[in-house]
Image (tube, rainbow, N blue to C red; front, side):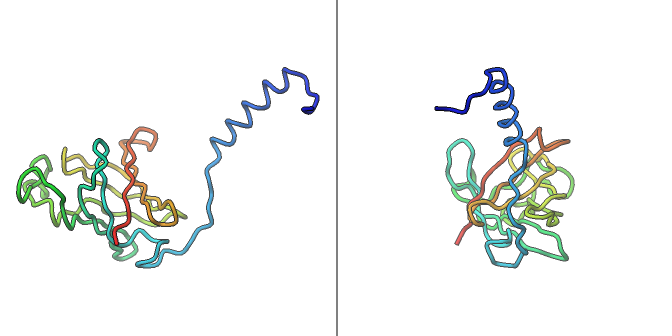
Length: 161
């Protein structure tokens, strides 16, 4: 038999508990970022197309002077041979996508990397972004946004071997 409790208390308490559980961030123990380990985003990552679920590119993330950067190393099935970033602005305009820096300026912030920016070569837009490892370092959550993280889009990249 369930705990005897007035119905109005059950109606009040359970929604509050549910909201509290959803709002409290999942705090995993912070691991040190070491190059090439699963506790760091350093290394090659497969980017996955949101619509098709197919691998689009390999982006290699490196650490330099305490900041993290990502460069496109390889494209899979590009729409044209040797594509360039036509929609990009300033110094990135018409540069080949292979070799293009698409992530820059990320600093470790606990168990994630924030303060950086991400370039979407398809539309040429630059977004503020954050990175977080998931599934024991086998997935990278890339969250790009304008203004605040609430208004943005998340991609999941897979660690390449």
